[in-house]
Amino acid sequence: MPMILVAQVSDTHFDLGTRNAQRVRRVMDFVAGLRRKPDAILVTGDVTDSGKPEQFAEAKAAFDGEIPVYAIPGNHDDRAGFRTSLLGEPASDAPINHAHRIGDLTVALMDSSVPGQPGGQLADETYDWLGGVLDAAPAGKPILLALHHPPAHLFSPIVDVISLADPQRFADLVAGDDRIVGVLTGHAHSAATTTFGGRPLLVAPSTASVLSGEWELDLPDHVMDYAPDPAVALHVIGDDHRLTSHFRAVPMGGRIGVQPV
Image (tube, rainbow, N blue to C red; front, top):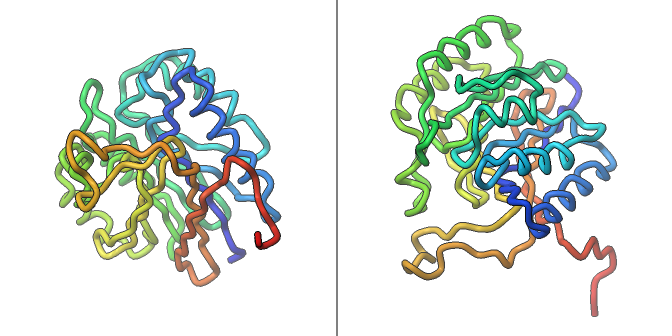
């Protein structure tokens, strides 16, 4: 199987201001300019800051390009607006789930958002949908799952109380299918890795900000840091179906190819 490269962008929080939009455009330009372009870009939720149609329009303009972009909503997004503005579909409050085949790889993106709530949950209809995707996926070929809310404890006092509800049900599903090579999430505004259901769990950084862990947090101070450059996750699935992930900060000032003195 040829190498598959998938970029993951998360928590862009388009808010009609220039800062967040510029940071996303810098990341998208970086990804599009890679010598080996990604086969797809996954956007794992909180596309907008408050679900306004104008914010989704900002996102659509930023995401349009040569590389396919597959996005799911987060707790800051509105399902109806997401559908009409980003997907060109009729408005609906039903979960937004979709799957895509990238070479031998199946990517299943699940909507873990709960309208009006900061925490996440996978609805029964999402589990039913995912079961159908797994049934239809080729035998012996890799599967990558993506959702917004992390299903594991991340030692993030802000996020851990609004993470995925009933993670054990999801863990049992992940552990029960050897084709699943990993689970991707956003929501935490911090690049993080752990294991879940015996598979890698990769949490993407936010392009907008960094959220503190319990070793940094001092409520009400040191909650969010807006100083770091935006970042992106790059996931590689090789011919051995092993998932390898790299995280790249994308400097707003551009790349420096010669060591400063």
